[in-house]
Length: 177
Image (tube, rainbow, N blue to C red; front, side, top):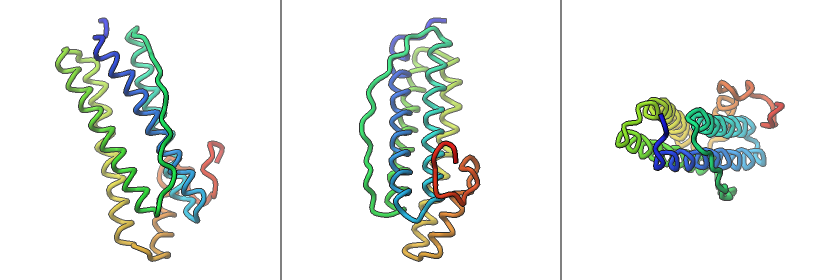
């Protein structure tokens, strides 16, 4: 089944959206690398990799559907933050933005009756629900911690031990870490 041209265009845009999200998270990881919070740096680096994998999933879907992949430029992300709370507030906004983008894609897939695309997008919507909850939960815990250094370090250690972050303890979020 040939992919609808409007849906093809939007799926290509979503590759860009996911790569932009990856870049946003990489900027957040880089900011945390300049602080004592290596666990948060690892957490954000892991998020960056996950967003890249999402982009590749959309890429492969277009390839599998014999649709043309058209890559677009990625904008420079915000790189200066005030605090861990500020970073996680931006992270939550980013996740909410991506959720809306995928919801919009799902609406188009429904309109053009492309059930295969709807199936792909349902996976992403479930993923986004999980991402928003994870980021939102950490943001609430950071707000509770306030400026208490000990509490922030506990949350940092916990963030660094999140699955996929390499287990924490390292000061480097680099791919080889």
